[in-house]
Each structure stands twice: as structure tokens, then as C-alpha cells.
Length: 472
Image 1: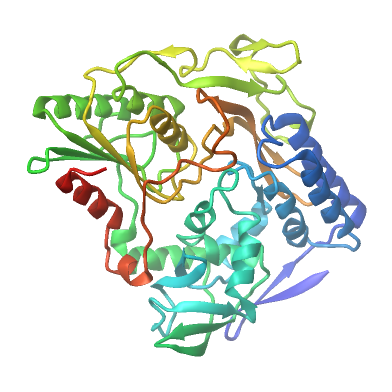
Image 2: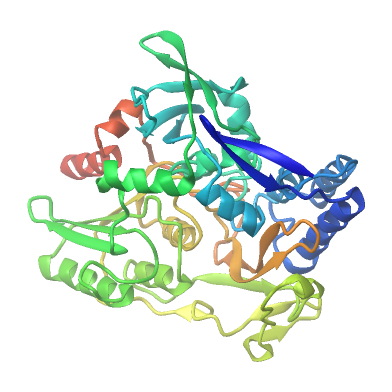
């Protein structure tokens, strides 16, 4: 079957869009469901088995005609999303991803989702003039409906409310318009400006062109080359540590473990009264670095994890994994229920406090992009009552996540992809009061699009205001 995709005015691309028979599509869907049940030890952590089974049954019922791989993805992705696991998401086939990057036209803007509304943050359209406007609909589909479709697939752990909005920024929304919501160029945009609803038609550009244009027009948006920075404010007796990711190098070229030691040494030498730890948009990284950062904030030995669960050492679905890596038997201990416990993880067991101990006030800046290892650090910090929290609830669940070792699988018929995390982390935090939510916020911060465009840092302003006033 041959299809024509309209790329831009006067340009066409012929591409073969092979359709797949319903029986093969149903086989792929069943493989996904079986693989998740076999390998994902946190499959029912946030959503009951009956509900997940219903999602897959509804998806199967829709596979009644030959479809392309992308059409299949659009039906199957919400079933995987029903797990509410931020580390588990269905992905489009590699060839679709390549065409999306190099050829397929996407909406040439970068958007921000604020209080359930879509705003243009960076305008890369040919005509311009859209910066700061609220988008009401695209190709006749309302903003609310678009966000609902995407939130079913793009989210954090559990019911954390700010994760989806955070993850749809930085070009993700533009890509999902095509891959998930079936919205193609040209884009008919209805937007609100100056109290009026206006319309414009925008031609798309490729993701590659979009990224290049972003670098040229907004070079300050480029991610910092290091993963951690630090400064000391003498007047406020406050250290400010920003951690963009738990891995790589800090601003001085040192590994983060060494840099954290240097930071706490400096705090001690200054007799610092306050420490601001900024982990906004920190998506995680090495588990042990989160524990290391926390260790200087307590004076007594502490547990970090309560359990680390793996279902099996090897899996039936490994037949669909290009380079399967069974769990090494020497790293785990088999339990009576047949599952395994990771006994060699560096964060397992009683952990020792770091020295020098910082006993001053701690202020944690966080948002929906704070996830995974960052969530572990924040929830442990909260459990020990060692910080004041400023910003928005992070995208990480309070009691742990499912991540660690993983297996990337390609489905045999559609070539749709999924990476299945194989270990569930349970933090050393008793109780269940937070349920499916993340770390609670003491001082909530919300932005308008004008504040974002102006570069306002309301979380930092709030922290410094609390320090100056002596409040928490």
C-alpha cells in the first residue's frame, strides 16, 4: 500500500506504509502484555490488575483491520501508559523515528503546559508572532483533548500531577502531535491573543530542522555542559547547589561524588546556615549519587532502600530483545515466593552519614521534571524532615519506582518498541499515606507564560525570601 505525505508547500514524499494484518497486531499486543506481566515487577504498583487487563482488552478489540505500525502504536500506547510507570512507555518503530527526525514535518514551536493550557514558549514559524499566545486548538482538536491524549501516554509515576506537563515541553509535544494524536502539517492553529481568538496556518519542519533552529535562535536554552554547579552567598550564609543529573561531571570537571564532598566541605568552612538544593528538571541517574547527596544531611546511620525486587533471572520475551542480558545470579538472592532480591546494590543495607555533617536549614527546589533517582533523594529527605520544599510536586512516586536493569524489546510484526524495567525499588519509608503521589510541596510555585519568557526564577526567589525572613 502506497501513501503520500504532504511535507510542505509544493513538496511531497512517497513512502511505502506496509500494513499489518489484525492477527499479527493482536499477537504483538499480547507479547507486550505478557512481557510486562513476566518482567515488570511493579506492573500493578499504581494500577490494579483488573484495570490494566481492561485496557489491553479494549485495545485488542480495536485491532479489527489491517493497520500501519504507527496506527497500531496509537492504539497500544495508552494500554502501556495505564501502568502509570514513568520508566515504561511504548515507542514508535525505529524507521518512523528516523523519518520523524529527518523528514516528517512537525509543528515548529516549543510549548509549555501551564495550568492545563498550552502556550507558545519558542516560536520558530516562518511568519512569527506566536510567542506567548495560548493555543486553543490545532487542526480542529481542542487543547484539552490533545493534552488528555498525551497524558495517557506521557506521565511520571502514579498520579503525580505535574509530570506530564513537564515532559511535554522541549519539543516533545510537537513530536507527539504526529505520532500519537495524528495531527499533520499544515497546522491550522486557533490561538488567543489580546483577548481575541485568531487563526493561522503553519507549515511544519522536521525535528532535525527544529532542533537546529532552536540552537541558532535561542542558544541560551542549550543544556549546561556540566551536571552540577555550586555557589556560596556570603550575605545570606547560603550555599546554592544545582544538580541537573545524577551522573557525569560537575562544573569543575570532577565526578559528582567528589564534587558533593567539595560542596559540603565548603559549607562547613563557611559555617553555612542554609543550603538550597535545586533539582528541578533532574530526570535522575545513578542511584548511589542520590544517596550520597543525602548522606551529609543526617548524623546517624540510615537505611535507604527497604527492598529491591526482580521477578526472574531470564525471561521468555528475551527472544525479542536484540542483546538480552540475564540478571547475574551472584547479585541476587532467591526468595520463597520465587522472586529475587538484589543483595549487591550499593544503596542496600545500613548507610553511613557523610562528613562533614550539614545541620543547617535545607531548601529543596523541585518540579514535575524531578524524577527517578531525584525522587528517591527527595522522598528520603522528606521522610527525615530535613528540608522545606518549593515548586511543584515531582514526577516521582514517594515510595520508589521501577527502573534499574532493563530490556529493550522490538515487537516482531509492527517493530514497535518498548523498554521494560526489571527491578522495583522500595524506599525505606514506612506507611502509605502518600499513596500514588509524590513528595508534598510546602510552597507551591506556578508560572505565567510571561514570567517564563522573562526568565523569572520564582522558586529561587521564594527560597531566598524565606531565608531572609527566617521562615520556612
